[in-house]
Length: 98
Image (cartoon, rainbow, N blue to C red; front, side):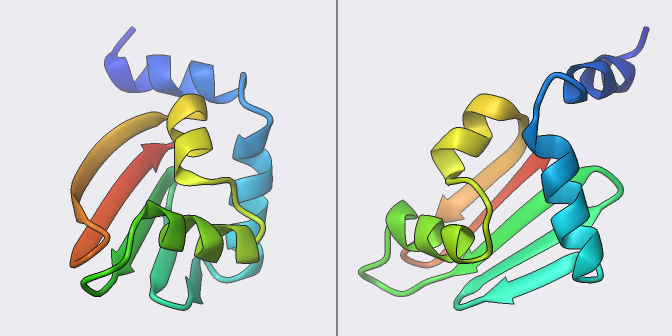
């Protein structure tokens, strides 16, 4: 079994996968709220944030909660993080395998 197949098996364990996929599919696989852009490509959730000097992860969490998504911390606990780069005070990107 290859790595990707193992990730797909674990996906069934999370109660949030189906809700997140449904939410994004209902919005044409993209949601923009404030400075946060959330996209879904196949089964990869991508969160991009273009902040300013004083912004933190909490600013991203507020935008996520506004659109009924869990916080970054909870997403990290539930899903495998594929990439995490940058900082909310400039440009931040994180991808999760749903």
